[in-house]
Image (cartoon, rainbow, N blue to C red; front, side, top):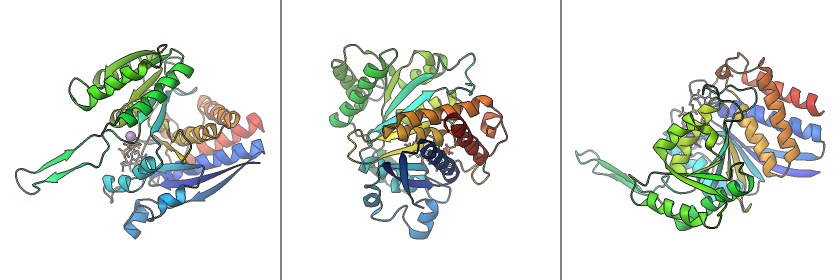
Length: 359
Ligand code: NAD
Ligand code: IPM
Ligand code: MN
């Protein structure tokens, strides 16, 4: 038996619904394979936990998570707890403490989903955004001054280190070099307006490019890059971006492949010294929470990415095929895709399909 341990953190809002379905799909994958066993432990760390305990997770939370093979997370953040408190209390410390400095966010149109971009199909939308996940614009350095006076102000510093920038760029170049269909790397910048960190970033893009002479590289300003995601998504292969730019680009990326319910993300510690974490790009969606209609596609795709990370490539692929079969059939899909199925009905349909295809 191949054994894996997974820490489940459903979190807040629709996170709970989508992880429930993702877990069912994982269980079904194990069942059809017969050679895998997964031990789960579920943690109720969330905004509800915060309201009871005054913190998002216990003081030894990270110590507990350290021993798992991976973390499968729904979403964190809900009205009632300020977002910067909930996120800096749970999600961001996991990404940082476990050096998950690579955030892989595929922008790939699945079979069966119609892109909102006119006349664009699966062959036009198939690239990967690599988001720097540990530093950059997300820093806790800065502060508030003169509050309550007319000089009230806030300062937040960005942190770009040689170590942090080189490792994410090297990962992205390597990916473009080995797996890129076009051997093309696009780096997001804003060195026209942000005059310290972004010229630094560009300089390292050019430097690391020398290690990968076969990779064609473009450095494109983030504003124009957003436009190109819409007007010419077919030119991209691997896109690398700083933490904030990668965050914004990947909600746009989600939109062009059918919406926030679709897009997955993998927070990877490439050295495998610590667990990696798999979570949808989307958040807790308070507007639809509790209605049972969230699309679990992103969460199910994350489950597939997690199996791939374990080296279970056949099963990872089987999940994606079953998922796309259900989407293509189009009979049982959630309201965001124009259907009227519930989260649960969709999840169960994917499990059924998985059994039919491979059982
Ligand atoms: P959101 O992604 O939660 O929702 C934005 C819109 O997308 C909403 O209209 C929502 O209904 C829709 N949507 C999202 N996921 C969907 C799904 N699976 N199926 C169907 N529709 C879906 O973004 P937000 O409203 O900006 O954030 C809500 C909360 O989630 C905030 O507290 C935010 O900080 C948090 N958040 C957490 C994460 C995370 O934990 N990884 C990510 C993003 C946002
Ligand atoms: C994401 C989210 C988080 C981020 C927030 C909730 C802190 O938007 O994972 O995309 O910005 O990283
Ligand atoms: Mn985001």
